[in-house]
Image (cartoon, rainbow, N blue to C red):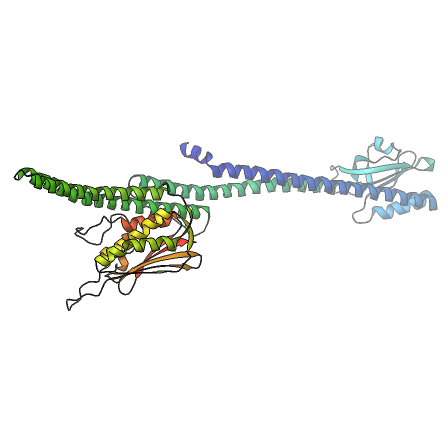
Length: 467
């Protein structure tokens, strides 16, 4: 009973029941409408034919009297599919026709009204069978009576056929409705059960589960595709969260350990104001690094949430990039790096000036730190070069920062855009692995995209902003 109750509560069952009721009512109305109008047409045709027969027989009587009328009635009575005819004398004795017996009250009604009557035919194979007809009776001179009519058996048979057709149609519709309900219910319930089962497995912790796609392109496939994309994104975020958690633990453990060891060594050593000052200064530097890491994390979170507080305005991206290049020129000169800029102005875009400046400085800073050419086999290295460019590319503003360093392997170019991802396994180089993550977050906020490519040699970072 529980399974039956579950089936009856399904939307598929209710919809099938509604459709069945609607189609049954419509089909019944259509058949009844056709039957009624067809019956009316047959009735009008019968009345018209009887009236015409009465007119013709009156004419024959006028032309040749009773004898001619009797001959005409006898001839018409023998035709295939003949109507109902009877001529009687003044005593009611039959003179001609194909009626063996008719009720006296019908025969005595000579007012010419069309009325139904039951009669018995001459030469009937079944003498006990009574026929029904629509007849009209009119009287002649001398008390003679003439009965003219049409048998309504065919009309009754037609109505019977209509009733049988209606019953058959209802049976067929109910059968087809049940078959359709069974098919739809089975298909819908099966897909819903699959969704429920997959959801339970996902809630149990198996984020690799996906909804099945049949390839039919129906609404379940579209829903499954959307949910699978959502599950893939959730799975990616969970893996990223785990990776971020591991990297945070690693990146914070090392400076915190250094802080603790430095303080412990200072306390265990010879008391000295100079040693204490050096330890405190080193602790402040280490703390500033930790604060910068948390500030970067907080900025990324705010940017991804769209609540960083920076106002969007129409800005010249080339001007912002030029200011960032000027800011880093002294740093590049001190480190022996050639920093050049190629800016095609104007490059207007609706963006946050502060975030654009932050992104550009991050890219230049990364290029200066990690874009140095590796030492070659002869012990020499190419001169480090960093190129910054801004130009229009169709409907976008394109920012490019390229270096001639070791570059980033193609397999890692997508991964380095995530938080705390650093290609250096020892993680001893300066930095927190959040620079490119912030660039990607700001690009998504502005509807842009970040692309890493091979500069041949080195790495080129392309950042697109909608103009």
